[in-house]
Every structure is written in C-alpha cells, then in structure tokens.
Length: 147
Image (cartoon, rainbow, N blue to C red; front, side, top):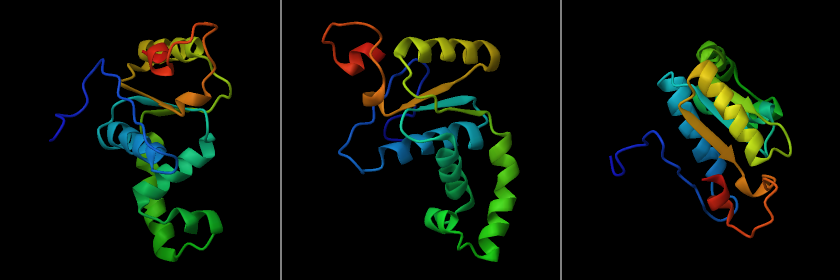
C-alpha cells in the first residue's frame, strides 16, 4: 500500500475542487471499515441526509447504478443484488448522523458517547465548511479548529 493505511489517532482531510468525489471517497472509507471489516464507524453528514447516504451505500455495495435506484428503473437482477446485500449493510456497525447545524463541541460529545458505547474506530465529517464554529471568534482555520 502506498500510504500503509489509516492508523488510530490520525486526522485525514480530503480536499479537492467541487464535484470531484470527496463525499463518495469518504463513504467508501466508511464502507470498507464498517461493512467489510466490521469496525464501528460514524458519518456526520452536514450536507446529505441519512436516506441519501443509505441509498449511496446500498448502490455501491449491490453494484446497482444510483440513477436506476432513484428513477425506479431497476431490473430484476438489480433487485436481486440489492436484496442479497441488504442484510449485511443493515447489520454493519455504521452510524449516520445527519443532524443540521452541528457545532464541533456537539460532534465531539457524540463521538465520546459512541466511543464509550460502541468503541467507534472511524469518524467521518462530511462537509467541514458547513460546520458551525465552536463559539470561538478567533480567525483560526477550520482544520485547526477540528484538530
């Protein structure tokens, strides 16, 4: 592996221009951790709702085109693949929080609870720019605030 993988305690920031697949990459990390390796993970999505995330996860896991799921034009084979993957996806230790307007302090508190109850191993915050500042009026960078 080029990077030797992810390690506990690391903070990894995925940055790119708009519409380059950052959210999809983050969801792929969550899929690999929770569905493939049974590691408890949480996604805080400040942009997408829980249903959209679930649909994207199922689409990727079942290898069914997302636009077919959205438009209702799935074939019998698509339905079969979806039904086959559904139990594993729903049993995965993946928590999705789509609460709007979360502050860094609220996310931190939720992470601590999830760590105590479920020994969470991966935290994903999708769309850092939408996060409310933690009450601090200093002009620190968002990355500095998160770390």
